[in-house]
Amino acid sequence: NPSSRFRSIAFTHNGFNNWKKVHDGCNCAFLTHIGKDPNSLLNNAQRTYVDLMNQAQHIKVSLDRQTTQQISANCLRLKTSIDVVRWLSFQGFDIQNIRGQGYDGASNMCGEFNGLQALILNDCRYAYYVHCFAHRLQLALVAAAREVVEVHQFFKDLSDIVNIASSSSKRHDELQKAQAAEITRLVSINELATGIGMNKIGTLQRPVLRITDNLCQALQRRSQDILNAMSLVLTTKDLIQKLRDDGWNELLKNVISFCETWELDFPDMNAQYIVGRSRNKKEDVTVEHHY
Image 1 (spheres, helix red, strand yellow):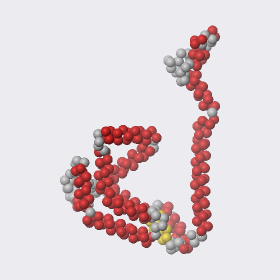
Image 2 (cartoon, rainbow, N blue to C red):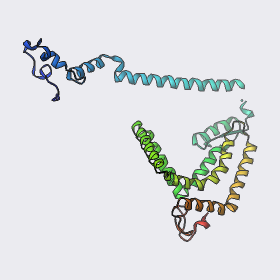
Image 3 (cartoon, rainbow, N blue to C red):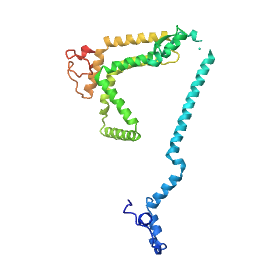
Image 4 (cartoon, rainbow, N blue to C red):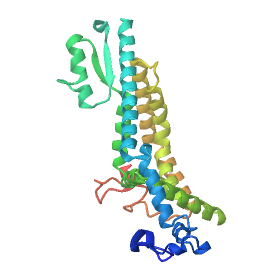
């Protein structure tokens, strides 16, 4: 329905037959119909007509363009993969000389019957499969973190937030605006207390992550060999065991000091929610005993 701001709807609804007003200065019916408003009925209709006649702006053309770009990108990826395989084949990498194969634990890779491991073993029975050490380390860290409720919940919430924010440009912009406003507020009161929860978790995880990070970086080097990797794994296990045996008191002291500095509630040592607890923890086991 036409808006009340339009002075004339004769050319769109009622019809026009008063030709005496065609040259009546500012009262000219045509000028009134055009209007000074860029959003007048005529201007809107004219823009719609121009867009309709512009084939490049049609939805079908836009979708076809995206499809063409996707096809070109896929062809480039396929061509690159083929070039890599041809180059590797040209080196003459004889499969009978292979003595090892390693990748993650996905069934299509390490499957004993239909996986890549089985296909290679069919041609070379000495190419023993070794699960990627970097991936095993990641799985071990994830499994260990899940046993602490607070840590598990933190990373779960963080993952949900990232997925929700990144799936929408509008949400992403709103999140950035909210974050900027919150930082401005905290700076104005000279207190960045919002980072306390993350820092508490960081105080607990830092000693372990500091040890495992060196191993993780080393396992991802292209020049790494199996003997050196095994040595690094054993060293890391020894360091973690030493942290378990001798580092608990120092770690607990640092956590208590951090909480006291920020005036956080720190329950009694035997309380259920100190530092973190296992989801399967029994009521009669203290946290200190558990760790």
